[in-house]
Image (cartoon, rainbow, N blue to C red; front, top):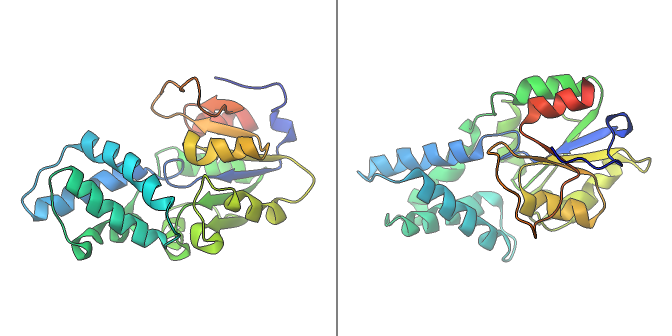
Length: 230
């Protein structure tokens, strides 16, 4: 665990979360969607190849001119399929945004959120469309105080727009903590804005030496909730 002296649980008032990859098992959801759709075409895919290709392709599409996330998902699915020697049409590629509502929370997500909601205001900053996030909210056991979606700010993290849009909800008295799995999408912009950030490192990955530096590293949300609440 990495922690800086300036980050103390008693100073936290508001916690924002990335959603997919932090609260929601997006790799599991993406893989199940690809596996099922490919099986309909009699195609077998390799999970790691799909996930690796997805991580490479999606940020490139998000960095281009803004388009709604369901379109990002569709185009990413089409390109990832091609990387895996499975040629599909744009219509077929819509299987991925259709699947998002079924992407499951991690096993520790809801218990941790309920525990944290007793003491902190909670928000979400997510690279997703509002209507898609509404479907995910039905799987989560707390009512968030606020959320910022990509279609609201017409931007994708690591752009700073999500964080800037969240400031009025957070307020000016400090105590903002951001929690996320992605060093690229979340830790980097939080660093740029001097927002304390926790890296949820569920896969016990080694942080590259030149990567953004989180204020705290935790293996999961259960551990984070224990650190914050006790």
